[in-house]
Image (cartoon, rainbow, N blue to C red):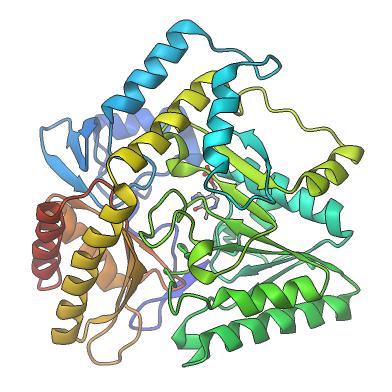
Length: 441
Ligand code: PMP
């Protein structure tokens, strides 16, 4: 995936604001590269060595404390004591493969299902979002008899062979296979005022193109907040016509909730719920265990059964007792600490503050988002074009002021504002102060 900067130069988004061979190497970086090799992905040209974290804050080896506006995994707060205790207690008592009945696993799944549509009463537990999406695509194919997958043009859905094919943002060269078609993300930039109608029309065009290729659609696979496309949240409801279109063509709707799920959008527990749709399959991961590697896929029993007739599914670690303990603690913390409401209220402070800044500075071209998931488009002042260079400058300037943040979007010129759900008002204000200063550099 390549992106033009304000001067029309093309560059790799994945390499943006990342350590690159040739950058100054501290000893710890040398050691890391020697161990992990070419697949090592590090933030910043001068990577940070982290030693601890708590709440919304991370501490580096040199003692610098950073406010974490990037990390959506420890979503209820870094090292949350309730999750830590639950994991520690369970691993001290029993952890095993998933072929035994262990009460806490069913307790967890029943608690999780209170948040899901009644029809999706089976949940398959996995260890990563990639595995969950891989399985969802396979289930959708078995249930529909189709193979075509529709995704958005800068989507990322994971790292297995199958899911990489459906992740245009992971492609460094080459093109998508015939059974994957990418459509523009649902934003005003592509569709003007009628985002819902425009998005539906592009999904219908993809279905027509599949027909021309002799391929039947299996699913529309969408991250319901379109994170790596640059965050597209409004107007709520825009997903519905596209979902209807894919269903009319015999396909399913897979909601990838790996990023927006677990209360982040403030308005709902899942991103899809803001759009008034019930997915056929829901995949989830990242914040599910607050850092404990766990993920899952919720499905209708008949869909899952049709898949399991042909192939079995077993996951050694997926949904083990420790994962269940972590997941249960996360659900309890979200409820006890009112984190969905906090995401809504603190997200509003950020949205309002960022929109005020945008009104006064042409380089902040657009602010979109829901709850604590906000995208901020940065543009060249004169041309108004997405400015990837300026975005890197801002990310580095934020780091210098002790705030960690990353970029997303087709042009790598959208700041992804995605702090832990426990963020408080003072921390939100601190971010806004740092951002005001960073865009002045
Ligand atoms: N879906 C989305 C929307 C993601 O952002 C990611 C990870 N960035 C995945 C799926 C894959 O999850 P994992 O890295 O846990 O395999």
